Length: 52
Image 1 (cartoon, helix red, strand yellow):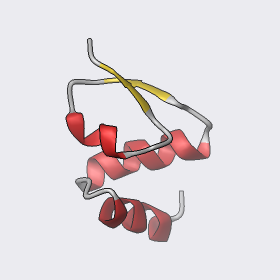
Image 2: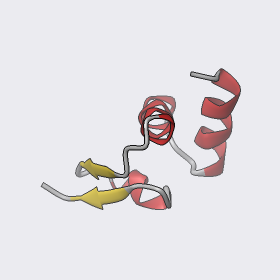
Image 3: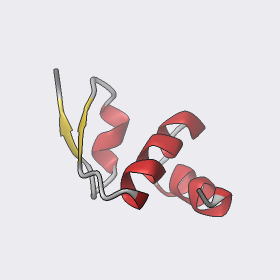
Image 4: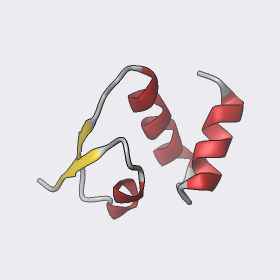
């Protein structure tokens, strides 16, 4: 995983580094759905957030 991309995702979407890592991982591996109560992921346009 490219640390520069991780940092830019963190800044662009105002995510904590741990959330940016998850978003980056999802983007690299084509994951488009995430189940979470963390509303921060709703700012990431390539992720569909499902609230459990």
